Length: 317
Image 1 (cartoon, helix red, strand yellow):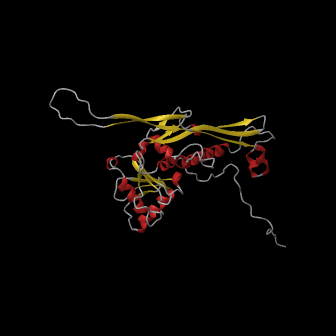
Image 2 (tube, rainbow, N blue to C red; image 1 turned 90 degrees about the vertical axis):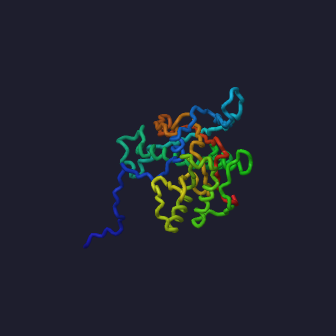
Image 3 (cartoon, rainbow, N blue to C red; image 1 turned 135 degrees about the vertical axis):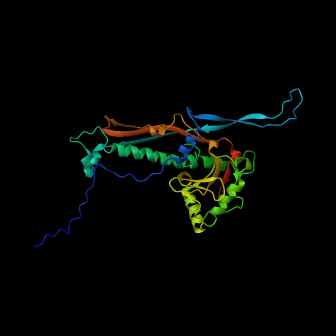
């Protein structure tokens, strides 16, 4: 009689010491702004960005005397930070019922966290991912918990409208009502054409878009046989065809159909302590017999010169 194992499921070796975390995008925008040094620290609730502007009026030389000319002014933009915390409690005994029991030491009391490194690493990455979206789409009037703690860049810019003093520049000059592979090159070109000439030589002027829009742009170039434009696929960046301006894809603008042309030196983040969102605690709460994860931080956004921003949104939006 032959051995019949058809009623049994195939054995799968489950490695209890390795849990593969899903790929999670990081807070890319925050890192770009931090690299420019535009992070104001020590903000408990709100603080101003003091913006100084001055001009230069030439006078005829060759004569004695002094005649004052020109105007200097100081204006302010306010950064209001949101106060955010993330807390989670985990009962270590839950691991006993599954293969995860292999990660537990002998005994019935656990004052430690199994898979602590995997857990904390992914938790911090998840926070970074949520912040990337909030940095652009944050809106204190939102009903979504991860968006209603502070105002994001796109929300701040969109609320200003077009046409008034200090308002951003309309980048959708042909009033496109959709953004697709067939017209995304036109949309990006219109943003480029709307950039004030005085900003064209700024080496940090870029166009931000969602990674979804960035993909459409790259596919549009490929379909037009424009293969000589090199894509930095790892960083989702490309020089806009025939220009000196970089198009940068960020997950924070996914699903919005917004594009923002701006100098990165014009973007500010406010916080109480730099990188506070990475400083977490994972500890054993003896009275509850559970592990607890805690992190708390503050963050806010602001644009200094709103009239130096080119904003693209669908005409129907």
